[in-house]
Image 1: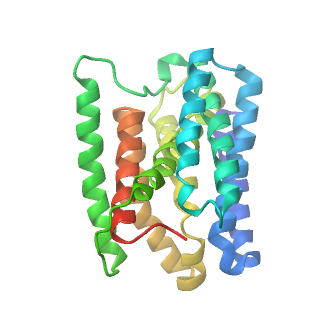
Image 2 (image 1 turned 120 degrees about the vertical axis):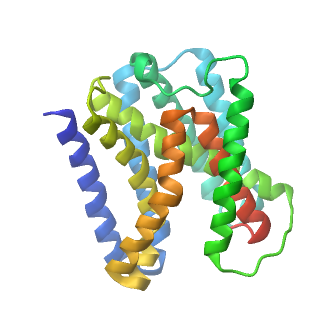
Length: 266
């Protein structure tokens, strides 16, 4: 079976679960879809690790450290939602290991965490913050909610999970999956577009079930398109065209801005 067919089958299964979830989950449709994507990420991670084995000790240490930071995201609601603080760091740890192991196998197509070069880290910070501030401002405008600035250390910690888990596990991991299916050969525009598609759509769709239920198919599709253009594509393109850290910083800052002005999610 070709790599394209494998990827399309995986996405078709995801879409069928997405549609089924709209009918059975009701008010919990969006939360349930996040759990479904969590399950997908765990299965993909385990399959990649079984294929490519564990990365070296240093990378295991980095994955563990990033998982601890992910756990800190849930300090503000650890009593009301302990599952996230317990399970999400584990999903993050396994997912990052899978990304590392796949990138080690196909290092020529690997996405760098930070571009090499004397001034590249500074450029990464500048790009990440600039895109984060821009998209964070747009996000506040689109939210159409009363805003009041209220900084809290929990707002900063809360942005770690979007920056780490959502970018590396719910986006980069799907790029690693595509590398695996294409056996490390990204030689055509079609293959690159499929990688970009998989880096964007699963993560975008998990935000939209309640919108499909409230607004119908057309309204749900319009909001999916908006999310894709304003958030999914920019972060995915940052990963592919620059480095992972710029996308992580931008995504984290978008959520940090929202948390400071709108508040943390319940």
